[in-house]
Length: 208
Image 1 (cartoon, rainbow, N blue to C red):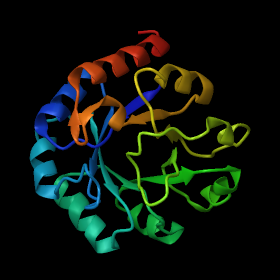
Image 2 (tube, rainbow, N blue to C red):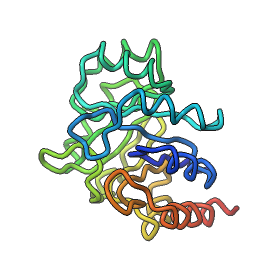
Image 3 (tube, rainbow, N blue to C red):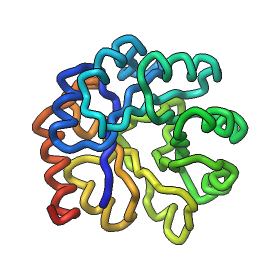
Image 4 (tube, rainbow, N blue to C red):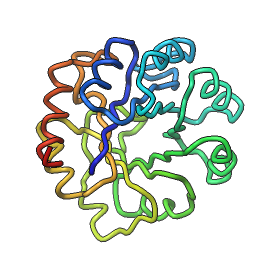
C-alpha cells in the first residue's frame, strides 16, 4: 500500500489536518534558504500534537553533521532526509542514530549511477532544477527510472498533484509519494481541500 509524505509543513494546523487525512509522514524543512523553512523549536511544538504513528521527517541540504544531529534531536525527528550532495559516508554515520532518506535530483539516466553507492533506508527521486533544492513543483521524466532496479524503498517526489498522483502510483509503483507545492495555497501553507483531494485519489488506488 503506497504511503504518503506531505512535506513543507510549517504550522500546527496543517500538520494536524494532514494527519487526520491519513498522511503517513510529515516533512519539516530545516534548509534555511527554502521558502518552507521552519526552525527546530517550532517543529518540536508541532510534533507533540501528532499521533505516534506519523513519522516525522527532517529535511536537510548540505548541512554540517553536528547541525543535523542537533536539529533532529531537539525537534523530535524520526527520519532524516538529505536533499543535497551529502556523501555516502555521512549517511552511514547518521544512520547509526536515524533512518535515512537520501534524495536524488534526476535529469537523465546518468544520475542513477551514484544511487547504489548509498546504503540508506529510502531512496527519494526528485526533479533536477538548477539552483533549486526540492519544492520545485516540477515533475521529472519518470521514464528515467524505467528498468532500473532499486534495492531500497523508493519515494517519488517532484511536481506531484492531486491530478497526477494516481498515474504516478500506477506507473512507478513506489513505496511512497511525496507532495509539497502540489497541495499548497502558498509556499509553506497547505490547502486543506487540496490535501483531501490528494489523499482521496490515493485511496482510489489503494482500493479503500
